[in-house]
Length: 234
Image 1: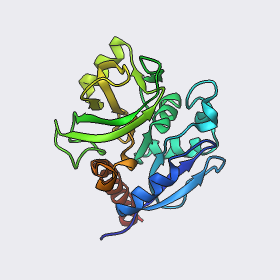
Image 2: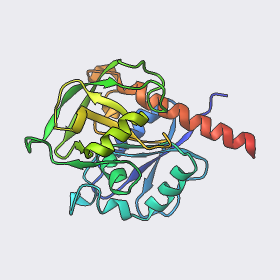
Image 3: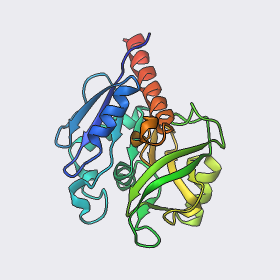
Image 4: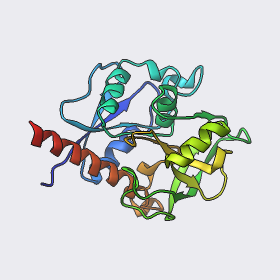
């Protein structure tokens, strides 16, 4: 059954990649819906949730520190707890870390500079929800645009995540000082993901690369499977 699964794209004050995400997901077969931060619930039959890039609440305090307490985040926590696919992109990644849904923290870039360019990232695992359309070791070209994208975990946590296979994507070359060149991680249950590169800006090759479509299409696959599973059990 080739349905268009519903994907909720959250909108916070200061989000600026929300509509880009809606367009990209729609181009890949999803029915993407914008969901306001003050809402207390997700649309019925939501198959996946995306927290987009931007500067939620002006990045006051710390990036994502205020957004983690938004009304909609209660529904996101509940959705993730039931195995629902959740993806945080750039600022969305920062929010998920602040909310305790992903391990580690995002800090100022090593050189304190804002980085905005295409980067090469390496797929570490091809068996995750987000990368199942990729092969381990495959190189993807996806743009980044952030000032606080340096992912950090202490040695003990880093070793635990490495052993558990939760470090899903790495930069081929260090662009921001992330520990282990980590560009994307997942939670222990493997249904919540975060990455600093912007796959929604790499869906159409006319923009320079179509590699981001591999990741977002995988998310749409997961959303579709969740909706179908819910239909079968009802």
